[in-house]
Length: 285
Length: 97
Image (cartoon, rainbow over all chains, first blue to last red; front, side, top):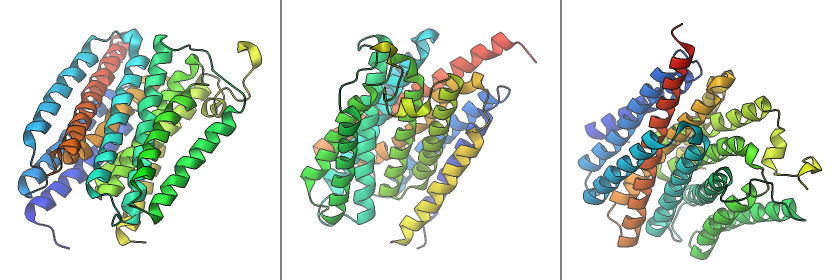
């Protein structure tokens, strides 16, 4: 398969963006170079977006609704800037949780659009699996982050909320979600199963964060970040886009490791955070 | 299994390994900025959102896609700004070294 000149250029832009994300992440590991790392990743993000827009200009039919994109980009930048500049530094974890909720929402919606437009009996196994995972993880990240935000902000009680059989029922819901994705592989046209996966994702986000205490929220946010990354990687598999796979995998795994390191630094057991109040000291009761 | 999937899996696991390696020795001080940073780059889903919003699709898809672009842009722009703001604070506190 030979690519046109523009397509080659777009792919090279994506490659450059991927390298910049890796270098940026590396620089973030040292206080001396951290700010340079942010700059590198910002350039990478601009390259990835510019590449996508260029692809839309060059190849007819890829992007036709420019006005929608431009308006959304402008409003989003304005809100993002406002949230970035005017939220007090003491509210950082809340701010990051909220930002995650937006990220999760975006991935989930992209998954729904993919299914709406390309779904049906002819969807390939790879596409339907990737889209299913994407929607489940995106929805989970969306509501899970809103829950984390609510707990930090005090809208929802910061204490772990537990009830009998919690782990069993959550486990059942997770198994059910995976089972439905498995069903979609055999019957890609089963739209009800696809939307059930999305609904279960929304529900799981709430139920999985509910039993975790407010003090553990930073670790939860890292984990949700990891899920958002994996969802982005799944989008990459569905669309055949390598920059999404690379950046999503980077984010997915670094977020996971970071969560583990943070819980260690805070002297919390990572499994406790993962599985909620399961096995926690009975002091809260 | 298709060749596309195999290539995708190579790319995925190599990037995952890189993410693990690059992060594994980060000092405690940088945990929160790193959390904000990884949040910002998870906004890469903006690329997927742009294709969803701009495609020659029905009204419902276009609206959902546009909301996705909006949400992803908030994530990216806000995430990077926050990370940089936090890191600027460190510099003042630590002084020049």
